[in-house]
View: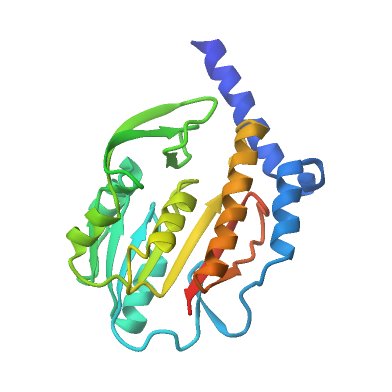
Length: 253
């Protein structure tokens, strides 16, 4: 038991070390994301920053219906959207930390509705994994598992049935699971009224290089898809922990 704990602590320290921006040059995976990011457009002066995210200035013409997945323990972005535009926002997160956060949140705005559900390309109950006690849960199983839980997932059709209104914006911060979901939405036009997607496309940095190459292939196919389907992509810059993921704003033409 003690050996496992010690090994886990060393592993966590190693993860923190390789996340340090000083070591980007030593990581083939991070160099790939850096080089790819440099070929893409970044958010610019035509965007306004709201909490940790960006949306185009004067983008919203009225009250919108928004689905926000992976809210964790921070709904500042969603709160500001309600204050600024009175949007109707559906919050989703099946993790214990988020459920407790919302349960203990004082004066949750009436425009915010919370559901302890995950999002996937397939509905049903699946495992969520935690790598360390303070980390977020993810559907992607890490090499070392600190904790695992069963959670309920809905697919896009389940989301449509639950909200029962045209969804015009989505935010997905779901720990490495966003890419196939966003790809599926755009490829099959599953949400016809959708105009903007904010997503963190997290790379499998702590998995084998074979798994990373699969992510690389899927990401490059996705970039071809959005060009074909007339979506514009803009990268959100990061001040630290750079090139571990692509945080992007996608806008439909």
